[in-house]
Image (cartoon, rainbow, N blue to C red; front, side, top):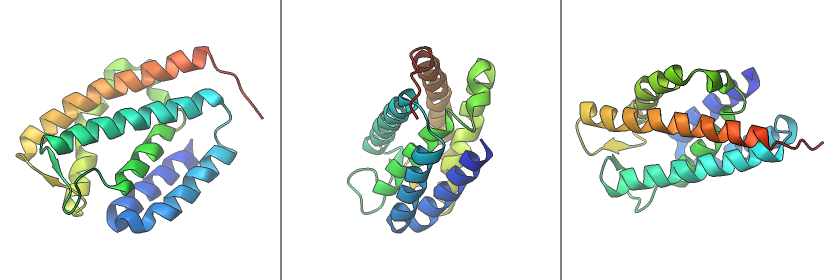
Length: 164
């Protein structure tokens, strides 16, 4: 769990700070995760679905000017890699949240928007609305997303088949 948490935070910072230049390193980190930490097909499916949902949500936020990515007509590649990295945390470093729905709601509403605010402060994204409005939109969305992501994790764990 600790390796996953450290890896995600390194990838997050590198991708936010260096953008697409950090994508090859993030890709190597993800390949290492799937080689040494991920042992189930259900986790790979979960990572795929969480990433797809996240990309869709952030794309909708861009289309509605909640997010503005300068010089991009779509969400940047580096953000896709942040989503893939985040998706790996559901089964590892954030797995402790699985049994605590109120904590999922609270962390989604408070912490997730702070991550985007950090990205905004580092110049990776601009907000098209006031920070208070953006925080409310992101917090509400992320509270629901965390409930969804951990619900998907529970569903896939019931069907889990490990492979070596």
